[in-house]
Image 1 (tube, rainbow, N blue to C red):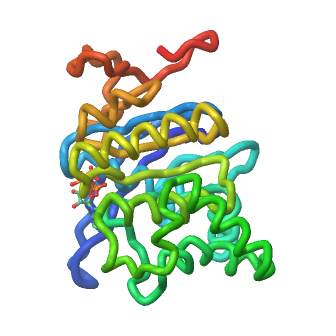
Image 2 (cartoon, rainbow, N blue to C red; image 1 turned 180 degrees about the vertical axis):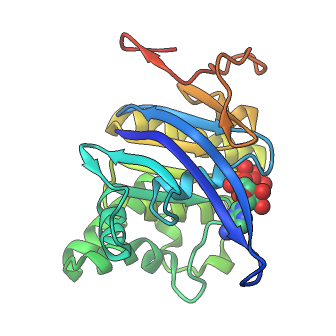
Length: 246
Ligand SMILES: Nc1ncnc2c1ncn2[C@@H]1O[C@H](COP(=O)(O)OP(=O)(O)OP(=O)(O)O)[C@@H](O)[C@H]1O
């Protein structure tokens, strides 16, 4: 589903003429299978967000290739990436990233507006999904009028409204208390199980990693092979053999 081959990335920072090269990712080979939940774990600064930004085209790799489905997306232009993201990816962020001047309904509706879906269909789809994630009663509330858990459910609904095959999540429960985290993780498992949505989740949290089929550890910009399982119940590994997650 998502295939990274020989991906390396370096940032160039500093003033013109005094630029400094900051190597972040080194020769990453990674395959995320359709229907898989993969957790990316690693210390702060190990390159997790950079990896997610590469998968979603917000940054371009310095070297290597990225395929999503059968499509080589490595060299898409910014406009092509924007269209590709809209059809293929949903996003969930730690900070929810809801638009404060829009109601919960309007936030969930926004991707449909961008896609050009008509108003009647939009209303039906948004209300149905908001009901499914248990936030229909807050449709007319603004984000500032909702709790963290409710805001995250709005953001989950927004990520799913275009029925993407892949959801990328960056510390999705990082701002939630343990009860709301549990609700979110159950929802992710259900969406994966019932709709076959593929999830790539960045996390520091053992609880979150434990719902993944596989956890991948990044260390200093490299994938760590054959790591010993440090978190009981979390299956570490980065290859997939014979239909089994290894
Ligand atoms: N736009 C950028 N320009 C320059 N350096 C960057 C940029 N984005 C990230 N970096 C550097 O790349 C390295 C990896 O950052 P990244 O955000 O991918 O790490 P992370 O594992 O997601 O960290 P965290 O868990 O703290 O979010 C860091 O050293 C960071 O300073």
